[in-house]
Image (cartoon, rainbow, N blue to C red; front, side):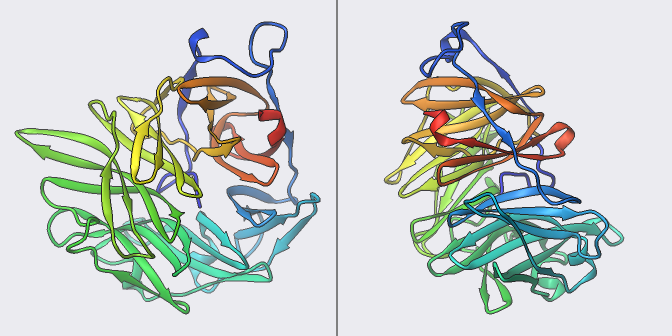
Amino acid sequence: MRDRSGGSLLVTVLLVLTVAACGGGGEDGTGEPAPVPFTRVDLPAGAAPVVLTAAGDALLVGVRWAGRDVVPGLVRRGPDGSLAEVPVRGATLYGLLATWHSLVADGDRIVAVGGERGGAHGNVRWSVWGGTAEGVAEQPQGFSTFGGWGAGELVDAVATPAGPVLIGSWQSARSGLDVAAWTSDGDVWTRQASEGTALESDRGSLGFPMAAVPLERGVLVAGWRLESGGGETREQPVVWRSTAGTTGWTAHPLPGAGGAGAALAARCWGSVCGVTGRVDGALAVWRLEGGAAERVDGTPRVAVDEEGRTAAPVEIGGRVTQVVSDGERVRVASADGDRWTVRAAEGPVGTVTAVTRVGDALYVLAGPDGGGQLWRADVAALG
C-alpha cells in the first residue's frame, strides 16, 4: 500500500504539543517522554526510496534509480538486514520513467502502480506492474484502461483473497467522478461498473478516494464526499467497504466530522482498522471495528491543510500509532483509549511520507522537501 496522495507523497503537518497531550512512556529526565531512537537504513547507491510495504518478514522498498534506463526499482531488505535488488522490467516509455504510487506484496505476489506525467495535457500516464521477488514486469494496457476522456486517477493497489484490486476514480454517468475499481484476468485489467453501487457519485454527493487497503476478504477505501443540499456544501470523511473482492460495497460516513473533513490514509490489522485524516484543518484519527467507527479523542494537535497528507497508522501493542512531522522534527504518537503519548523520533527529520511495520521493526520514510531517507526503530522501544 502507499502512504501518499494521488500525486506526490507530501505530508505538510505541524504538531503542536501540549502538556495534556503528553503522557505515559519513559521519561528522559526532563519530564518529557523519552525519544524513540531510529537508525538510518542505507540503500544501494543511486536508489531514492519512494514507497514501502511489508513482504512477509522482509521490507520491500520502491525506489527511483539515478542514471538507469529503467527508473522505477525495488529493493528487498531481509530480516537479517541484507539488501537484494528485485529485477524490474519496463515495457513502455512512461513505464520506464514511472514513479511508484503504490506497492503491495501478498505472499509471493507483488503488485505496483506507477505514474509519469506526459502528453499534450501533462496528464499522469499510469502503469501497472506485477510479479514476485524473482522479478516484476510492467503489464501494458490499452490506453482506455486507465486513460482517455473519462480518466480519473489510480489511488492504490490492494491484495484480496479474490485477487488484486486497483482503486481509483473514473467519470461518473451521473455527476463528476465515481470511486472506481479494476480487477485483473492475468495481465489484463478491467474496470468494474460503479453504477448502482455505493461507489457511484450523484449531484448531491461526489466521492473522492484517497487510499485503499485490504480488510478481511474485501477492500476498505478511505476518502471523502463533497455533499450538497439546502444551499450548502460540506466535506464529509467517509470509508467505502466491500464484503469480498469488489462486491458488496457500502459507504460509511465517519463520525465527528466537524465542518469539513476527509479520511486520507488507513491500515487494517485483523478486523480492526485505523484511519487518519483531517477535520477542520487538524489531524483526526478513527478506529473501525465490527462495522462501527469512532473518532479517537484527545488526538495531538496537528495542522493538516487541504493539500496536506498523513501517513497511515500502524498497530503496536494494540494501540493505534501515528508518525507525524513537526516542522523538521518527527514525532511518534500512540493512543491508549483517548490518552495519547507523544515522543520525539531521534534520527529522522523533515516530511514523513511512508510508515510501515515489519515484525519487530518500524520503518519510516522521511526527509526535507519530500526527499526521503529510510529509518528503522525497534518496536520494543515504542512500548
